[in-house]
Length: 431
Ligand code: BGC
Image (tube, rainbow, N blue to C red):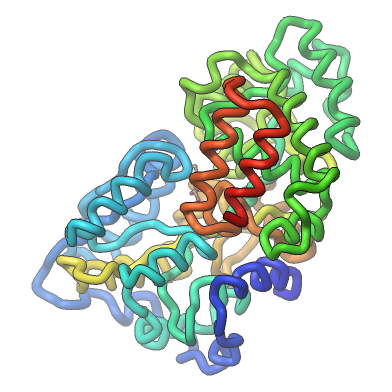
């Protein structure tokens, strides 16, 4: 919790007068998940808007829906999922719906600055009363709640915590390239010779997909080259985006991109990760939803795949959390409240996160219920320096992220040079 102070500090810049979580101490004490079920009575429905539309992400959603159907058998789940990793299509569509006063009953939003956008726009309701009703004020880390809170009001219910800065690798491809799968790399630079060896074997050294995954890669290079404090400084104004350290990081990013698959811009994350699963690529940098793709295909950690923090980021946890909201004007608020209850419940969080690859946001979940990778993530979350993910809504408002994504796409498609890229990034963050 202490380690999350960094994320919370960044959040505070936007959250302004965010109150400290003294509030968290006065929870209603462990209400049973089912005690609030059948809210509204007499049936009803809930449209749940996410981007967990296919593959392992859909399996995660299905697991949560399974618990929901058990806890709220009289409420019909309506799947409003819109395909596109990281909400690359969903977030725009959601914005149009919100502006047209046609909100879903509940939608997925990232803890941190992205959520603050919806709060500032008056698009989501304060759900603090539900925290009391469900008895959940004490079950989440206080610093996570801070990222969901403005002026003492809590605006969403977290379902999970993901880590953005992981490498997933195929040990057979590494061995065939003369690399030791157990090798560790201390920095991005120290990683390049290994990527060269894979390249020499005619395989893709590093798989990546469309723009948002490139931004995910970029954030991890920034974490690695600038260190956790320097990276946090990018978001609180204490690190100069125009400085030499950032220039060096962008140079490393450029070089990393030179090792990636040429078809990247037409792919989404599952296809990029699949290249590692299929032995076409050696490494993939991706948030830890990737582990669910390996597991869905019955791949065994340590044998069929390995994972490690992006070189130079051991001890740093690139943090993001999905959470669910109650939009202003939701057509079925009782259905939405029932959904939020299931999301908040230990049973819901356990079933969902087992399938999703993330770790539960609830601190009372049992680590032994989760996979080997997830147990390492739970441990890292407890001891690492927590830094906010750029690509997944924790570090910046969506408008800033969009500007960074546009600049990144220009750069990686050859439409701008490094100098222009750096000045566009600086302008995106401090317009
Ligand atoms: C979400 C994850 C999701 C990933 C890829 C992230 O922004 O937080 O839940 O699996 O995007 O779609």
